[in-house]
Image 1 (tube, rainbow, N blue to C red):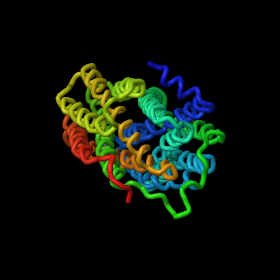
Image 2: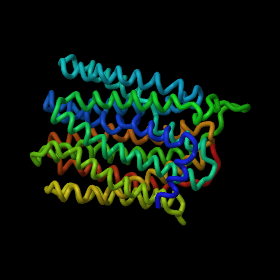
Image 3: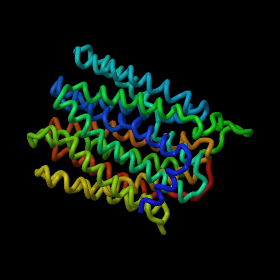
Image 4: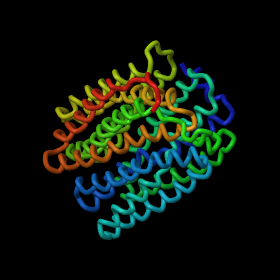
Length: 393
């Protein structure tokens, strides 16, 4: 099953840039949960913790497309190191603001700076794969590989940030996120031989057309699924605390991601008769269905088992969406197109986390899982409208 992965990783430089991107993406899975753990520990409010995390991800969403456009215009090696440096400074100042009990407005400002500066490494590495590979089947395998590595990030990151924050110090997890982000992004940007040429966004006739008829519905699907992710993350932390086992929150989230990792491996290793549209529709429906029983579960082991099964739908759904974008978006704007989908995800995380945090504070964790269910249902409905056909506008 792994032969298809070996073939794409055998391309010169592929293993190096994919490995560096893996390390660079660790902050994605660590910062939101790390903020919740730090702020709730210092203030005792999940609502406040959720809003700080929401500010971070909203700022990331607001600037993600601009990051993609800048990377396409000026190159990964120029944009990414500057962005990750600003991210590190902003997040460090946010931690100081929380620890020193500075005015809350400063906490929000620094969280916004960190979120706005977080570089789009996930979109950049997929654009790099699209540049170094010609065969569509190998591109599908490469996208599946990156989806699997995304899930590795979400398996390792929550466990690591929870372990460090609960057993060492509340800021230890976020500090680790800064270090991994800096090291991984610098290493990724330094690999110039596989970098897509800069300045491809401008053609003789101006901007290459973006197929908005496809990209916008996919972005809406990602928005609703992001709300599902954000709500489930905050609610699972609260569920673990209500069970008297706060430390297990990271393990529960990692179990969820592990299910997605397994499904992603299978997705990239086999030849599909159905197109990515079909996988997107069925996968989004399965994600919604998996959220339904969570509000009725009180046992931690049973919650882990249900999350594991539910995670099986995540990677195939997102791989389908990314494949549809790669097939339809002009290569000159591919990083931007990928960033639009990522924007949808992180923009959905913010309201999902905030609403779930409010419900947790007023009604408990079980009721808050309904927020994730609503996000999944909306995503499944919107996915039915995504069509690859038509002409760009």
